[in-house]
Image 1: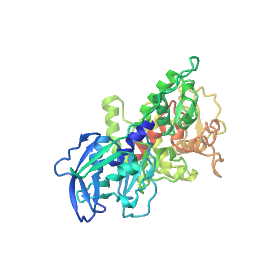
Image 2: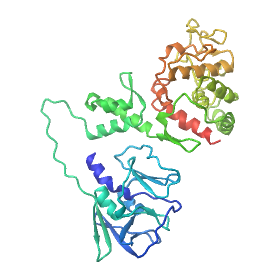
Image 3: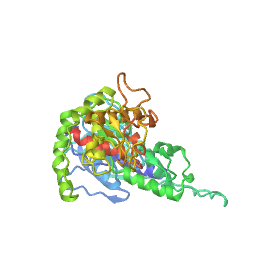
Image 4: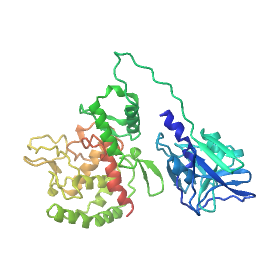
Length: 444
């Protein structure tokens, strides 16, 4: 990891950035310059930004250098930040900046790079390319750099890290985890996701940082690789309608709805032709008219302080857009699979204090049966509420959820906290609700 980190320090120089210039420099003297990286000459495409000498300092283009060293680069126009993540770094929100900053800030692995003024400052040229004084590479990031005045050539070379051979463990010591296993657990920890283990218990992936990798079996490590591949399909961040970017792991169940009922309706209307075609053409099943529940979810969610728009998105996921392709049937008004455990009810199960006028269980039927759509929505909201908080039901509310008392209150305050709890194994359950269902609704 140390070798990778040191080798990639030079990646500050990378990334293709195509955006309008935010500042330019008035040159007093400008000359073209050549670039050599790790002993290989760099060819600048015709018409593109090359290296140059400006006011006595030599500047190199971030994009061209990045093509030869590799990096993940993101441009944030609102804050004028170049966010660079090396392969050894974890994606994290960039440092906050004042409104409408004038200068370009470079953020490397979630830390703003402090560039001494005497080295010059990064800026964007008239060709819409970000350049940086080449001395920054050497003096700020640890690369070996050299300037050949006679040939006007910038030489950049990564510094090799000399590692001592690891000490050999005693013959009777347990096997040591590989660097790949350690890196795998560190990557999983960054997702902050619940993971179901082979022994049927589950942990939050952040706990992997405190557990000796050698304590996991080879089979468990293979399952961790599968989880990593599943989690990597989802962006760990989401941009909210107001432009705020947050970690999906931090999106709470409690809070105001961001999508309106009209947005939810527009989203479902846009999805209906696709769902109808899938049901009739692919599954050879009758299309079930989608009930108008958006306003109920928004209103009842607000009464409990639950994000009703996300609960609506969860219902769409649980019911396959209200086509009920699983065990629960449309007439049950059960929109989140309450008491659908894989086995039909006997009818003798306790309602656990839920109002019998609004919910019942019948022999041979999978899941609870709710008297009205409103009762079904409220039971769903109540089930989310008990996962999210330890408080009793809001004043005046009647228990409708027959499984409310079976949940440990406050054990899942976030949507990703439902992973491996609401759904099993449910490795990406919360991520799917957010990205596959809720996010499309926000754009309508």
